[in-house]
Length: 306
Image (cartoon, rainbow, N blue to C red; front, side, top):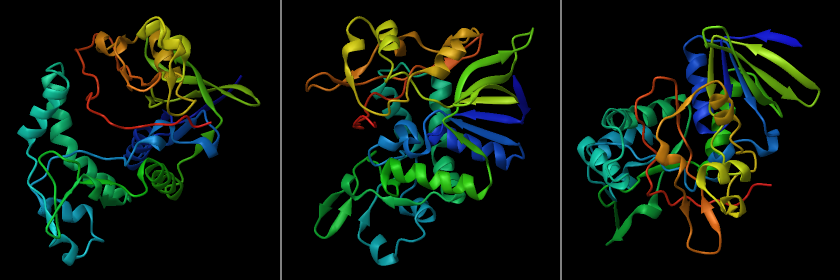
């Protein structure tokens, strides 16, 4: 079997995987990105993220201006944006997760929320003002407490395309139609590579670090039934058809531990017909602390990407 080497392998090509690839490259690593889908179907469920909104803490307009350098002063003068503090974000996170978020991890999410969107802007992601979240008042626009203020240009699809251009500019190789099939581990259980499958056959890629950014199992009827219960294999789901849980299964196969069992046993469903949004389980290495599911207040809508 053909074998090659690199520093970091990133599996997946949605927002999380793309950001991870760029961060690793900027740290000096030789990075290789693997995407199971063909290039025309890239991006996973990020592509379907309605508005690609990024909630973050801020002190009002002064913090938002660096994220939106193209917005004119005359436009800013029409905007009323109250601060969204760390305490408020933390309280909202605990409210929508019904207190089940791990405090340390919730604090990490809150504390890094603004630095993250600022880093993304510095990398080349263009943000826009989310006017649909504002309330017009006498020729002005006001955002209520906690409302999202920015989203990526052209939504989730635009975010995928912007990241792809940045990755290309940095000459980070991306292999489409290349599926991760099995993780390679040594005698001590350490992951040292991955077996991949391409149209021409199988090969091995050895690496110092590996990132599984390949999403959940919303498009896998068997895993839906296994982890969500009887009948979920019949649900009509929305999103990319490539979201089949390969990364999750590979991690479980080598002994990874689900971070929070409840996130395997719940799903968010729409009231109309059988459409449903499937919660994404989170994996942690052994031994693992308790983890949290993503906030349940998401209103993102999907349609199957064929």
